[in-house]
Length: 418
Image (cartoon, rainbow, N blue to C red):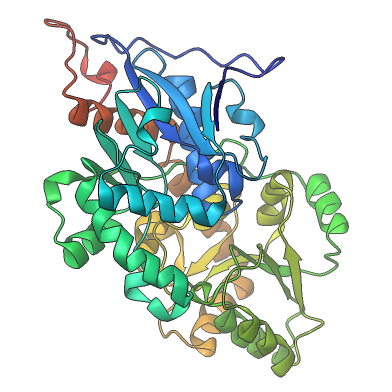
């Protein structure tokens, strides 16, 4: 059963677009908001932030409607409440399998529920068949590069579905140059079909004052200086390397603990047991999922943020940490150098000691750490959801064959999609 609803009552009034895009008619777009409704990790952050930015900055160019599977009774976050939405109610696994089936059969299972939209945008790796042009955001191909870090069932699904989805989409948005490279190498996707649109940083991620840091630390039981990791608890995040580095730092008499923020992912229990093996039970705090409003203070209060990941499609936590003024130590894996630039320290040897070497440099040199904080703030400022939204509209226009008003000219600084 499907439903359509408009802006929620008493929803905040959306900020009007900042300038006219001088369009030749508003393009109707339906955007899959499922990750923002049902998830809490990076896909949710991407979908919510992009949808909100499209609504805020691009409403004179596009008419956006959300679409999601309402099987759980969950609703979009408050930031998306003003945006009209269409839904269907189907269990999580029937939905995933149904999307694949309708692509294989070219069946209009979802098509008739999308309304009059001209473009369908899949914001995660699920693209139903549709007669209208489609855009799909590809975040990563982790299951291809590190198959051992996915469950067998998920790996089997993606190995059938992803090549098909990528082939059928009219345009692909890759969130990093590295993801584009993976698409080229793994599937031979035409380069002209892939558009790199980097993610942005939300305005709430900024350095916060000491009193707010104190209150948040007290709320989460943090009573000592700390290192920080943020992200879903799964093997590719390489928490084990952080535990090994912490053991070395503790052996030197460092007072720091490690705060691990994130919900449980797949295949993590064997990694968690490493904490007991290294006798770090009192030194590692598994904070679980924390309220979004607490994250800026947790980042701001950290003496060092760690991301020794084996693979990242983009690496939003690195960007958030830098925006809050935390020194960042991360791996050189995949997209992370694109995000962190020269503002981070990179792990040379991917060992516990290799990570400990870089963290020592941050903890032992206050002047260098302060410079990293300044550099990180400048690096994070390069990433903007407004820019990402406008570049995304450019992708929509390219697949829809839209044109600008004949003869309309804008000064260079006013051109919407340069």
